[in-house]
Image 1 (cartoon, rainbow, N blue to C red):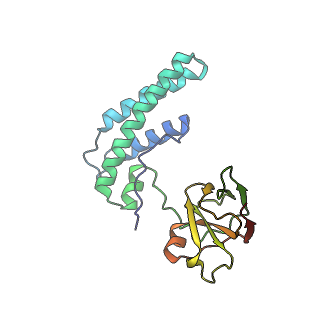
Image 2: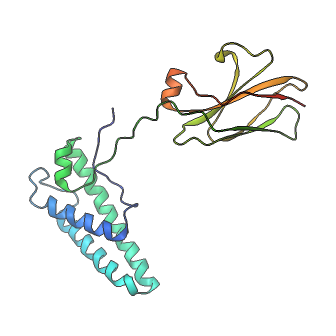
Image 3: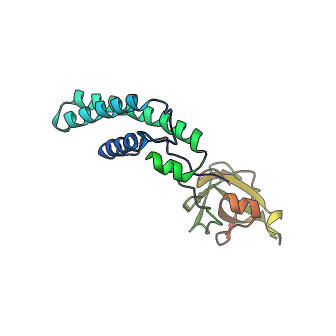
Length: 211
């Protein structure tokens, strides 16, 4: 089971938000008995915060060089916070009270995807080569991958007896189809849960004669 930890990546924070967060971290870490020997030291981190703050202020109506300098100072600050966050995690070992006391944001635990719904569509287009079919599947949010199952007539009663092709994206190529035969195709999105239970929500079947 995944435990929550202090955030160690700060690339998604806006410039002003990063300054406010980093200064709050320094304030909460100062004389914090839970973290007596921070790495890097708070003196180093505070210096990086100050340098970034000065550069941020200067680039508001400054030159491209001022912006480049701000970005460089931001990178230094992010690296310091990342290392400090790693130190926090090594000491706190998932203790949310301790992490919260450090001022660091806490990582989120991803919610289980569950069994994805059926894709809204499955489109099949014949390829230039006989026996080839291009599949275009409706995108399903948070899908792990996509699966197309297919079979000649008469179709098997059990899904396990169909042929299957798995794609990492919502498009892919199916080969080895027999010309002159009628095939039935269905598609589904997959997740860790659906793969574990072998339960999938498939699109409506499509029947195609292979030319």
